[in-house]
Amino acid sequence: MYYFDYAATTPVAPEAAEAMVHALTRAFGNPSAQYPLGREARDAVAAQRAVIAQALGCDAGALYFTSCGTESDNWAIRAALHIGRHTGRHIITTAVEHSAVLEPCKALTQEGYEVTYLQPDHAGRITADQVEAALREDTALVSIMAVNNETGNVYPIAEIARQLKARKSRALLHTDAVQAFLKVPLHAQEDGADLISLSAHKIGGPKGVGALYIAPALQSKMIPLLRGGGQEQGLRSGTEATAQIAGFAKAVAQRADQLEEILAHTRAMRDYALERLLSIPTVQVLGTPDAPHILCLTLPGYPSQNLVSELGDKGICISAGSACHKGKPSHVIAALRLSKKEAAGAFRISFGEKTTPEAVDALYDAVLTHKNSRFPML
Ligand code: PLP
Image (tube, rainbow, N blue to C red; front, side):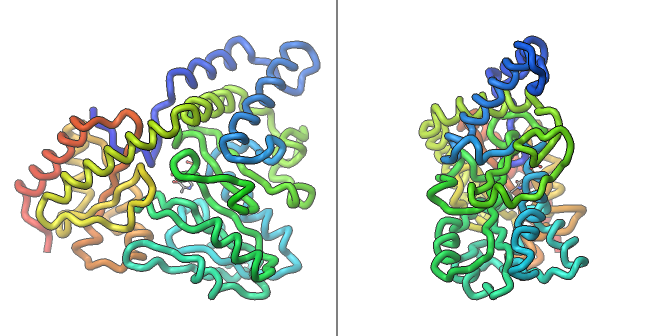
């Protein structure tokens, strides 16, 4: 099998799986329990939180565990609007966010909020100037992702944070950094976002755990997401998912340890794939592949769902999943304002530390064979 869908999810690193088994079977105490087994679990979660916080560039006390990136996004948006309730009911986001941001925003319009969706240019770019132009007195929230999950475009979060400060805006800045964490430079304290969403399963951790960074100045103003036993400093009750958290932290530690090598390899594989696939006549790049692990391409006129299923039969996993939903281009591809043929042919390949040049060669052969064995649509 050749796996090119690291932006969808990643295999759990063996050491992370081992840490999870240990937490599930040996150190299985409830962190709230008062006897040694409970204390052991509590200390482990505290140490694991510190590992992830260090990789994000914040204090451990600013990092709250959640069940996934989607939960972190939903919580961040609701909490920011609660904190900014006296500022107003205007939200700025982009037309190319993940549905974990777009769907809550859509629901909020039913509750009287007004949402400005910034449109990318043809290369998928969003600029800080667009944010500035859309900013109003009543803007309570700016929510902009750090890396686009379909195109790999990086958005200028630190610059947006600086601009909001310079304008003395009361808007809070949230960034969905699910595709950015340990993939591109990201530093909570230096970048200046108020809220940052993370997910473990994009970086060799397990599914079912994420985190939300909450800037220190906001912590006392947050409304709890879940009320109950008071875990996560009273803001997100529920017995800690000790195994998932152990796997998350181990994956972070391992990745952070070898980050430069991993990113150099990922980037090299992406560049090699780019060079090979662009040698196929008519293949084009979509967006701007700033992030090292994501490449969005199109084979104009060849519907990507056919390509994905033909490659899948050969054991090659690529995605039109979010790039093409039920035969329609995704909202991200649609926002690039391409021709019908270009949009229909959009597919995403994404890379990780285990991607090899041989896998890229197999992908190239399969895409070329697909093109040569079919007639273009339209
Ligand atoms: N945000 C982005 C940019 C993503 O790529 C994803 C996952 O695909 C999510 C949010 C959702 O993360 P999770 O699967 O942990 O809910």
